[in-house]
Length: 421
Image: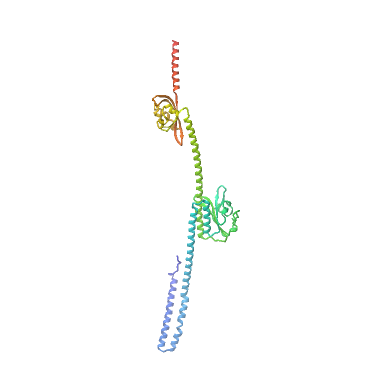
């Protein structure tokens, strides 16, 4: 925006009218002298002609004086304004170019920070780009270690790359530790004169003059990621464009470091979870294998049922007891084998609360015969699913003994009656 020239100011207007009047007066004087000289020459009045000729040189003199005192200052001010405008335009173009360079630097930093390279290489690329864009001699990136509560050098440029992972700065000490502790930026024109300066062992910053250090901090969750620092060998005053660039860069880098740490933690958790699942799967497989062998070799008849009573497993003893093949029993319902079928309600009644059931009745075999049995059920978990284990005991011998005892009791009762008679 151009400055206000005051063209409508009353003083300016009066000066313009004065200049116009003076120019008109000089022109009128020049015309009058010319007319006078012509008239005197035609009338051959030589004295008057000489007077007119003497007055005639006054016209350019008055014109020059009028130009120097009125018009020339305006031209000078106009030239000064044009020169100032040209300087401003040059400064604006320089600022535009610098902003464009900073924009490209932000693009390069964002690309480098999120490239598919390893995280250490990405940080080194960011340090190199920052050194170039900030016109610095070195860039250092420190990461915060929560366990050690200190800063560890993670990336550097210009010959300090071999010190990565070897330099540690406790929080609160030296410039980097102070910035990390206070979460405040620090711009130093003379590095060594600052009271926070401490020469960190293994870092050797004594050869640098100016420094600019920023905390890498994620404000959304209050997490300290580290600090980033640029150093110059000569005294440097950081411009507003450089400060804006460095601040934006710190924000991008803070988020990138946090995402990388979260992804690393997530990968670690996934590996641990996969190992845990593998171990538990092996344990479960081994446990189920032991159960299968135990059931298959058991002397009791064992069935595994779904919650509605469908048979999904039967051992050899159950097949022998029922007179059916194992595959003939699979997917049949237990109620088809029980007499009466209502015994299923007794067996399955307690399984809903995690308890089992017990029932005595008859079992129908494949040839239509019946076998007195006692059935016991219990809740079973296999492969994360709920099943019911059913153990069937053949109580035919027990029934025979019970009938034999009943007969003996009747004989004893009849004998007692005869003795009394």
